[in-house]
Length: 203
Image 1: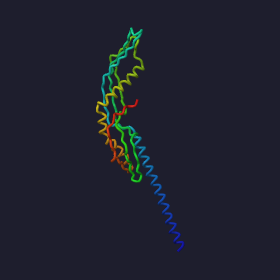
Image 2: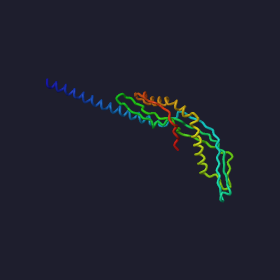
Image 3: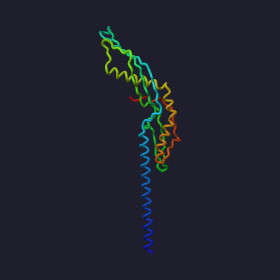
Image 4: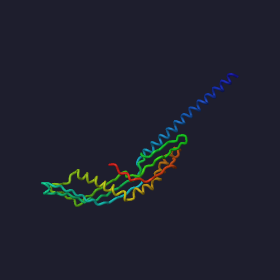
């Protein structure tokens, strides 16, 4: 009888240990899943939702004066700017919280759309050098930066930011798809997407 009781106690202890070990492993797996999910979403990083094309004419002129301002020399150019602006979301700025018990990712903050990149192609027409004021390599670099800034200043009135704001839900649904790939849920019920000043492109 005592041997039989010892066997039962041994079996119960073994089952208890196995159950505890399985629970610990399951918890570790869930925590690992949440970490992988958050990293996966962050790695998507910048998500372009709107693309806009610009064609602008930019007049460049630079005047240098010499000899006590008695003589001036002017260089000028007519620049046709063809540019492509990409508007979207920097997903590294979102705020996420993992609820491992419910296998749920809570989306606490979603960023505003911003200018992610501007690609410019410049064509020079009516380009002329002054007598002692000629175009140098650094002038062309400066012109390129001015052209990009010119397009940047045009974006707020283009309506691209407003269009991108309407695509916010599509971006959230993309995140939801990523989350659901391993059987988790995305909770964005408390999310509010407001409107703020258009973020500037970082040079």
